[in-house]
Image (cartoon, rainbow, N blue to C red; front, side, top):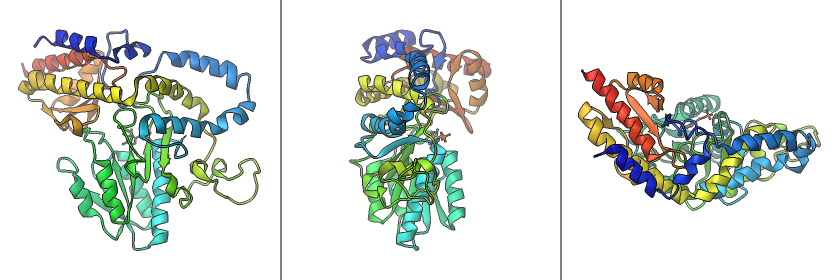
Length: 408
Ligand SMILES: *Cc1c(COP(=O)(O)O)cnc(C)c1O
């Protein structure tokens, strides 16, 4: 196939192609295949920050806390919830990093389960989960004297495997909706239902799915979820995390980082911690208002496009990448390490080859930017609003060139 022509045809037929020009750097020749680690900035961020500095911060000063900022974690959280999570308002908050939010919600959940039934002393987690998830759960288990039940994906984690691990000892299940390596999508509804039948709670990590695939937290009866906003939600480096707690659990859960912003009356500054009602109790300290500005700008763009169109293009991009890999890269020894069925796959594709570490370094030199994941994975993240089919074609052609050069 004539790759660049195919790519040009796909770009021409893409109903959301025009969003790409809203992103900084999209007019350069650089090929960006890592939007799932750090999304590109919107051009509109520049004016938004400028207005923020002169307006709410520079002129409003401390008054802006009363007028706007105290409610921002909930206002932005609700918007993420409605646009990207299938969550009705009042259940999503923006704060902290994903790691800290995960700690708070996981501790809250295991503490609640232990209080209801001390025999529930096990946390189910899988070995392929993201490192911060694995490290945090180890820490919580040590802190609370709990056991960890590690599941080994082979090569992917199946719903049956999770279900088989559940029982009267299970307190909480901690899993990722989309795994950071292969991009496999878990069946959240089925696993959550199985956990509930066993009396367990589930915390879902949505870092690689929020803003990429449709999510229905309320409909799937999810208990708790966390995710980050700097990947497919383009919030910028270090933009804060979101946390979701189903309304039915909020009153019964207490998180361990009892700061003043989670207090029922933060400005009374009285003795003794008393958790606020609703999602406020899951806050700890001063909300990261400045760090939310690019995210707020992105949510407007995301609302225009809609998750259905974003997902449809995500599928088309990953299908295109896999087709190129089968045609150009498979003869050079590359294997697709992601699910082949689009319905089982998020917006990134893992391409495996023993030389991928060197290939990734050479790609970065040539302004083609994917990620490398141990031990042999080239991970290409395709961010539907900012990635073009032409970028995918160009990037993978350079991979083929580099692998061919190494074979000679
Ligand atoms: C990116 C990612 C994180 C990141 O956590 P931070 O605290 O924001 O660094 C956590 N979990 C998963 C699954 C991720 O993909």
